[in-house]
Length: 425
Image 1 (spheres, rainbow, N blue to C red):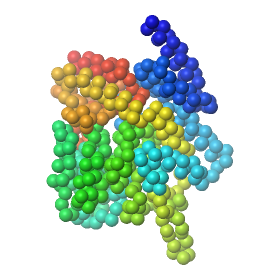
Image 2 (cartoon, one colour):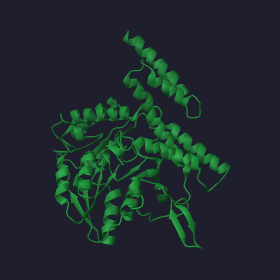
Image 3 (cartoon, rainbow, N blue to C red):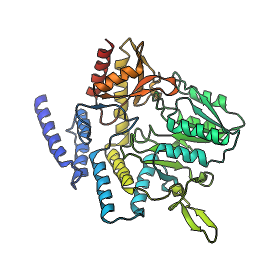
Image 4 (cartoon, rainbow, N blue to C red):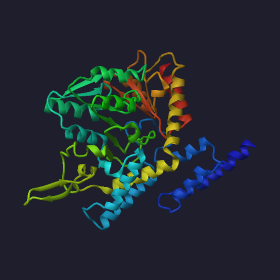
């Protein structure tokens, strides 16, 4: 009976896979049929999802926290849009398509379209926030010691350039809400901004975002998040979090083209945040002879100059792809793999798990190290065996990070655990 079901499932998968070609009109239809079919076991479903990527079968990619892989249908969208641009070149953005992508981004994070700006990366969004707020010498910004260089370096640059003071707390990995207390202890009358990652790139710790915002707003502070490790990884609603700013990239967990991102700015703060880099598309009205410049009334004021809008069309397709599966389903899948990995690591005496002790604050990024072994050399050994992981020198964590996403599966995680055991022995 099981064998018969396996044969039927394999036949159905093969048939659907044949339909799932980016250039065919039936691509989305075939995916819908797969998702809605009760005949497809969960394992077979995720295997089918994996087949939509160019990742080689013998290459286990565990570094979505560094850069994601785009599904074939996203690549096809970008190719077709760029090809059309070469047939009929135009420096102008196709505003209808541009706004359509921003609408999809806004829906993804629970924002309004007018609150979304397209950027090149989370780093660019972080810079827009830091350089655009009315901060002066002596003003204080609170962050953590576990920030990615995309936030850490803009913070240090701002401090060097303008004299603001950066105050950093060491994350509490035993008690997630303990981070709230650590932030509170750093707040003074000179504090103006709290700016941390939603998920840290170091240990994958989820900071209590809503509670941080509540604390910050009680103290009359702005609160911003770097969402590079969050967007596309788990469901987000910036209105529920109630943050003021949220910067993210589309080329990690969102599976979009490289060098794409977005910035959320609370509508009430659009005039508080000054656009430091402007150009075509930034102004609602401009006239040099009459000395007139009026910023665009939405977050579009932070966009400027000629853009490769084919990349952002790809972002829209990437969001469609994730939405067909379901972001919540993706998050549950990723978390399941992460907890499976944690459980396996915990049985290896030589392993020290560096990610949070509380499951509530763990995510799909798990970091560990092997006692008495150099973390760089150990990570290199895994990579040499076709297990792509990432070293974590940030914050002196000195560990190895494994990121689980929708193209990973239980078998890969179990093989990685076995490989770690083998390398240790």
